[in-house]
Image 1 (cartoon, rainbow, N blue to C red):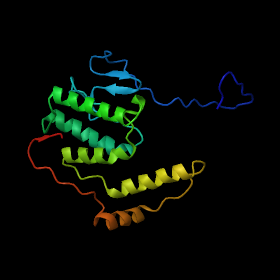
Image 2 (image 1 turned 60 degrees about the horizontal axis):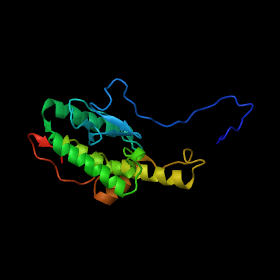
Image 3 (image 1 turned 90 degrees about the vertical axis):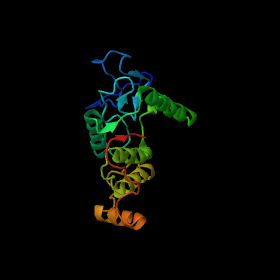
Image 4 (image 1 turned 180 degrees about the horizontal axis):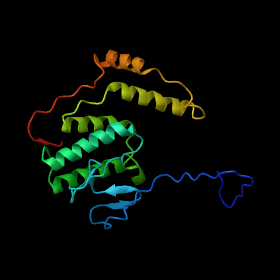
Length: 196
């Protein structure tokens, strides 16, 4: 890294890897949500503004398998807006949001990593699946995610080039663990559903 006024000569390209900084200039600051040190609040389940749940933020969590989660989040938003799923009251959502913030603070997680899920994406995805009565995401995705992460930690210089097992191998591993390739959870009854 170049720091403190160092000079690099003869560079053909410069790539700025600045990371993501959430900003919503099209929203009134603090009315629906506020962004402070890259944490967006108050968002219930990382999606719904507690005081304005007619809006949803899809795709905020980081360090995840993105598109399956985005699909589940989109389903939940559509079901909330159609009346098929009921959100808790604004007060209940706010209490849950404050509880998550406090729990992450106690765990020593810096505020700027509030939306980073990593392995926490899997119970979150299960919650989304249950709330929308969708099939849970297959276990092989988690096994593949875990192997990819392990390779990234063990071989950061070439983990992208190191082969993973085939999809069929991951499906077999999942079936050996659970008896199927699906995680187990209780199904949600019919009718209007409420989020946990």
